[in-house]
Image (cartoon, rainbow, N blue to C red):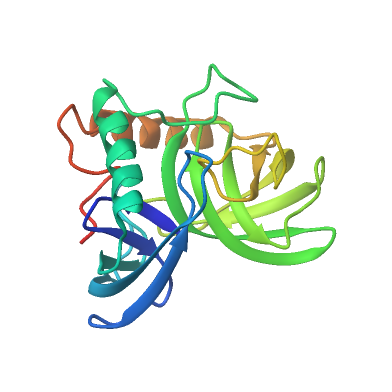
Amino acid sequence: MLCNLSLLGAYVHVDPPLEPGTRVGMRFLLPDGQLPVASEATVTWINHGAQGSATALPAGCGVRFTGLGPEEVRRISTLVANFQSEPRPQLARPEPQPDKVRIPFVTPCVVSGPRGLARGSVCNLSANGVFITADPLPELGEAVIVAFRLPGEEDLFERAAVVAWLNCDGPGRVRALPPGCGLRFANLSEPDRELLATLIHEFMGQLPRRGAARVGPEPAA
C-alpha cells in the first residue's frame, strides 16, 4: 500500500520490507481518475519499527523513482500542489458520515466473519470505525471482528464491527482509497471511544501546514 508520495519517491507499506538497493517496478493509481502511474524505483531505506504515534508509518520501505515520465511528473506535481493549497488536508471520504473526522492511519489488520479469516490493512480511522482493504472482502451488512494495533498499545484492538459500505470498481468508487470497505464499530465502550478520540486529537495536532513538500505524514525517501 502506498502511504505517501513526492516527485522523488514514495513510502510503501509492505511487511517484511524490501532490502535497500532492491530495484522494483511500481504501478499505482492517483485520485485524478486517469491511467495508473508506472515507474521503476529503488528501495532507499526500510522501517521495521512499531507505530508509536498516530502519524508514524507502518512497516515498509522508502523508494526513489528512477523512471517517471514527463506526464507522470506533471500529475504528481499537480496532486502535491493541490495538497499544499489546502489549509488542512482532506482526511476522509465525505460519506457515509460527513460530520465525523477520519484520519489517515495505515496498519496491518485481520478480519474474521462468516466467510472465514482475511488479512489486510487499515487505511483510515475514526471514532466510529475504520476503512480497510482485505482479500477477500466481507459483504455489505456482514457482522465481523476486526483486529489491529493502535499506536502505543501492547494489546490488539479487537472489536466487533459491521460492514457499512463498499468501495469497489464502478462509477461510485472513491479513487483516493483502494478497493475495500468501511467498518462501523459495534457497541464501543466509553474507554474505547476516549482512546480513539485521543488518537485522532493527537493526529490533528500534528497536521502539516502550508508548504509541506509531500502528500503524507512523514518523509518517504
